[in-house]
Amino acid sequence: MKPSFLIQMALLYVLRSWRSTVVIGVMVVSAVAALVFLASLAMGTNDAMIRNSIGLFSGHIAGEDLPEKFPHGRLQIDGVKQVLLRRLFPVRLRQGDRVETLVLFAVSPSEEQEATALWKKTVAGRYLRPNEAAVYLSEPTANSLQAGVGDPVGVYLSPGDPAAELTVCGLYRTGLSNLDYGIGFVPQTTLPLSGATLSAAVFLEDGVDPQTVLETYRRLPDPPRFRTWQEFMPDLHQLIELNFVSMGIVMVLVFGVVSLGISCAFVIFILKNVREHGIMKAMGVFPAESALLILTEVVLLTLAASAVGTGAGALAAAGFARAGIDLTSLTSHNQYFAVSGVIYPRLTFFSLWLPPLLAIVSGALAAVWPSIFVIRQRAADILRSL
Amino acid sequence: MIEVVDLHKRYQSGRRMVTALEGISFAVQTGESYIIAGKSGSGKTTLLNCVGGLEKPDQGLIRCDGTDIHRLSRRALARFQRERVGFVFQSGNLLSYLTVRENLAFPLALNGISGLQRKKRIEALLESIELPRLGSAFPSELSGGETQRVAFARAIAHNPAILLADEPTASLDSITGRRLIGLMVSLSRQQQCTLVAASHDPEVIRMADHRFQLKDGRKEI
Image (cartoon, rainbow over all chains, first blue to last red; front, side, top):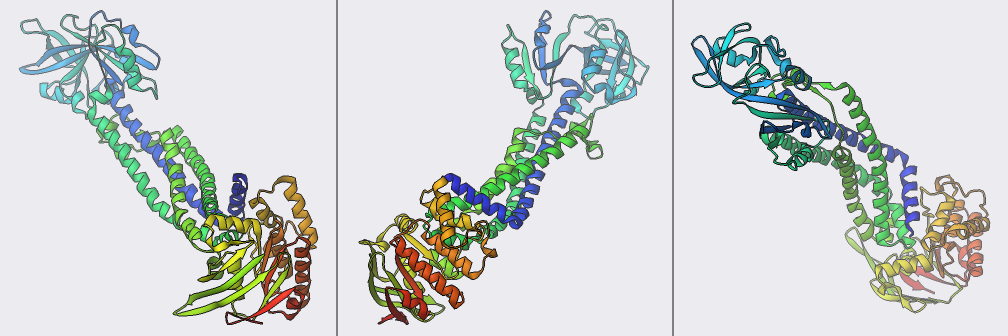
């Protein structure tokens, strides 16, 4: 049998058994659409966790201990949205008889407000302003110092140095221990440059792979140490990988259960046609051709239904990707959603191909038993039994 | 030439073994028609199935032009069936989801006949069975007689050497049945096709070149 004739026969069967085709089609369409949407939602959740975590302060890539004359303009390459330079001062803060040792980040307040969301976590007072002699502290640090907004604190850069006096302009709380303990913020011009180390926080455009940018940075002459967020936030990295694995397992399990139903429907769909296969065998259709015909019927139906399902799922994901799904009430105490609990589903190659592939594979597997049945049965036995 | 030698076939029916054929032998020359007569359950269908390769006998051999068809591999047997055999079943057994024209196209496509040649052959077949306007009809839209005529046209579409017909007139009234069998005999003669048919209709039996009676799986003269 020529492949074109085989496809024509399969197509005619699928189209003319339209009631069964519609029932199975609806099952496949809804399963695939649901999985495409779920997969895009999982991607959106991961994105939200990354966006919240790196967007709060750290950036996608951190450059540490940069030389004072490092040509930081070279960090602004394709895919990089913004580079923030920060100076780090190990200091002691004193308020009355209370002392706290911490690292002060000297930052550009306007640039920080543009690129990060830490200032949004202000719980008292306000964020820093350029050139003011002020310090922005976390609430736990301020509590340890028993300092409040407007209180003066003494800053000691090294033992024996005279204290610089700064006013607490605002307090923040993120819920993240690495931001809430041991660090504070001052405007860049507040403290002398000596004794400070220079660091860079690199923020990337959406969808840019940090590794690609990192590779370029590492090719710079005398490159300083750069780390991606996956390296300096291994907990988040692991969580996202765990999410991928668990989502994959969920998809396979969900589709496993759904495909049982679909497979049963397919078996009925094929066995309904077993008389026809018996007639064809009597007319001299080869066993392999019978199996191929059954497989083609199933694959054609699943392909069409999967395409529709993928389209429907993609459409739903695209719709929610614009508006976002606000899960703030479910994420407000979660450190990985410190800034926003809005999730924007994102379609990826993975979320688009896995569900239809699962549908086609499960459909093809469902065709195995009826194919074997048709191949093994003699035409006379099939025709006699009906 | 079809040569059937000492054919035996038994099968299980519930708990008991039924003897369907017992020592059947006969020979049909190319282009001749042969009718196997007998009552329902006498073994006619089993015998035709064995001759057409649809069933394997327990003992005996069936030679078609010197080839023992039951020694052929599965694929070779299927090739023999698609190229050399045409089968008219008792109930027509048209492919239900195909139109009359598509049913007729099926054996032609299986034998690699395509395009204009296939189209012409289908139209000629529709003319010969006097159903030129029913090409687009589905089997469910045909009467019993029309179904059997289409089944016959499909069986001879690819010019097979052997035409096997299992009680083709069983579900038809006597006039329609005689018309069909007349058509079968004349067209198979025209195509030099060996016809082996099973029937218990005396009118049909009279039309054949040769005939024998089956009773409880045994041949009676």
